[in-house]
Each structure stands twice: as structure tokens, then as C-alpha cells.
Amino acid sequence: MEKIKVSAIQMNSKIGDKKTNIEKVNNLIKRDITEDTDIIILPEVWNVGWSPKNFQQSAENLNDGETMNFLSQTAQKYNSWIIGGSIITKQNGNYYNTCPVFDRKGELAAAYSKNHLFSYYGCAEGSFVKKGDSPVMVNIEGIKVGLTICYDIRFPEIYRAYRKAGADLLVNCAAWGLKKPIPWECMTRCRAVENQTYLVALTQSGYIENDEWNIGHSRILDYKGETLSEIKDQKEGAMTAILDLKPMYEFRDKCRCIDDIRESYEVKSV
Image 1: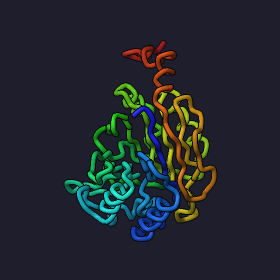
Image 2: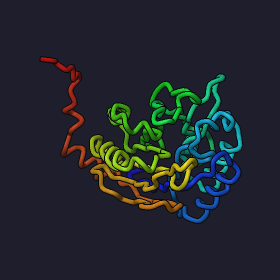
Image 3: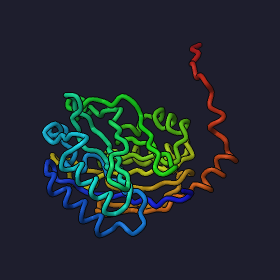
Image 4: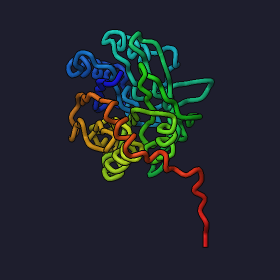
């Protein structure tokens, strides 16, 4: 496909309440997703909310579980690919913050586990889940999509690796805190610009717990860093954009930054 229609759902999750959160997503998709949407994207830990101490009790098997079954059925119902934000999975006795991807038939096509875990300022994600082994890029009907989750955005190396591997679209599914607006604004836009790639920066909105809030302000950015669609405030709903690959590749041909990357950047101290 030369063009792809992408919709992303910004929402506020209720901590530890899968049933309520699944019902909310179902209603938001029913209300806001338009026909012929190729990819539906959800935010990080949308089914249980951002509360690492509660992660393990919410874990599901990658091949089964309430959330996984819902995502599979929704993909079939809307004939859309679903990038399922992230859920907590249990694999071989370990827990992971995992982004599952379902194809239009509801089959699990890929799964990426968060490579960088946020464990600062009183947060201890790394105490409850294990980091994933590697980046995962999924081929969605010819369009290569690089998957990342929240804190991954602080590591340009993973995005550069996707770009070198041929990524057309980068996705960051997050539950980003309200107190960090400048990093969210700057780093999401930079990842799009420096890699000349479309980027979906999707985060939760609204209250978390213990006087903490999600930032909201999700955006779909083009390969020059320009905003195609956004949700500026804390409201819940979908943002949608049609991504046209042809002008992106024409731009890359004219400005071949990727060719100027050096094999080594060894620092010489003097």
C-alpha cells in the first residue's frame, strides 16, 4: 500500500479494572473509528492503567486471556490491524510489558516487549517486569512498522535501528506523566525528524492515582515532524491520519541523511 489509514485511541484507564477498560475501548472504537481504517492503535497498559505494583496480577498468556481475545475479535470485527498498546504478559515464568499486534483476521502477528523499563522518581517498573530482548518490526501489508513503548522514546538508538532496517512508521504507545511535557514534545518530534519517518506518539490521558496524571496530547507526526492529527488535551477519543508513503520516499531521496551516518563515533578525549 502507498497510503494507510491510521487511528489511535487516547483514553484514561481505571487502575486494575480490566472489564471497565475493555468496555471503554470497545465503546470508543465503536464511536470514533471510521470505515476502512487499516490500523487501530491503543496506549500502554490501557487494560489495567499505570500501576506497576499491580502489573503481575493482571498478566495474561500471549495466546489467550480476556484482553488478547478482545483484541483478536475487534481486529476481525473492524477488518483492521490492531497494535494493542501494551498489556502485561507472563512468558516462561517471567512478566513483560508487551505490545501485541493482530492482523485483520484476528491472528497474533507480532509481539514486542518493552526494551527499556522506567524505574526512577519512585517508579519501579523494572521490579515487576523484565525487559524485552530486542526491537520488533512488523510488516503490515508491505508497510514496515517499528514498535516501541513509552520510556523507549528516550533512546534514539532503537529508532535508528528501525530506520536502518527500513521502517516506514514508528509507533510509541505510552502512559506518559503530566509532569514531563517538554521531553514528550521534543523527543517524539525528534524521533520522526531524525529518521524521516511517520510516527504515532500515543499516550493515556487523565488521572492515574496518588495525585499523578497522564499527560494526554497524543499526536501523529509526519516524516518532517509536522503534526497530522492530535488530541491536545485530556479528552478521550480517536485521532486519525492517512499516511502517504510516496512523498516520504521522495523526501528521503532528496535528503539522504541515512547515508551520512558514520560506522563509528568513537570519542577521542584530549
